Amino acid sequence: MANEIKLDAQARVEFGKGAARRLRRDGRIPAVMYGHGTDPVHVSLPAHATQLALRQANALLTIDVAGGQAQLALPKQIQRDPVLDTIEHVDLIIVRRGERVTVEVPLIVVGEVKGDAMIVTDQSSLTIEAEATSIPASIEIDISQLEIGDQVLARDLKLPDGVVFPGEPDDLMLSLQAAQAQDLGQAPTEAEAEGEAGAAAAAE
Image (cartoon, rainbow, N blue to C red):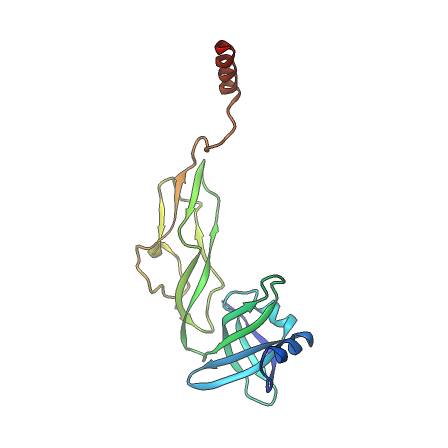
């Protein structure tokens, strides 16, 4: 389950591109918090600590606003620089303890396939409903006991207590198929090469 990460925030009173650039030069990231019928709260966050925190999917953040009340929040939208991949702006949604939220978590495949089986992935993430303070970092799919032709459906997933998948139980997550004996474009074998060379010599 996700750990709470505290970020010290400062209220923002200046807006616009110029103000945002000044914040970033000072090592801070502009952000806005909203939800539960409250007016949007504009803050700035420490850039390095925020970058580290948001490496985790659905990071549960405690935003401690100077001179105000700390708020529990989840990242809703993260804007990144397309070249540097640094965070430029963050939208945060305010949550309450015990509140259930809908989020996406990554699906992680564990275990080794048997023989020449090939994993065909249909879903790389899963939409779940969970308490805001108990969102799993990921959902694991163990393939070590699967055979060629087996499928993993949503109903086969082992979800943590309190976590619910709101979709269809027959939704396909992944399947195992036999690897093709020879991929298209693969170099010919030595016997095939000799046969082609003999045919070419006969033609001459």
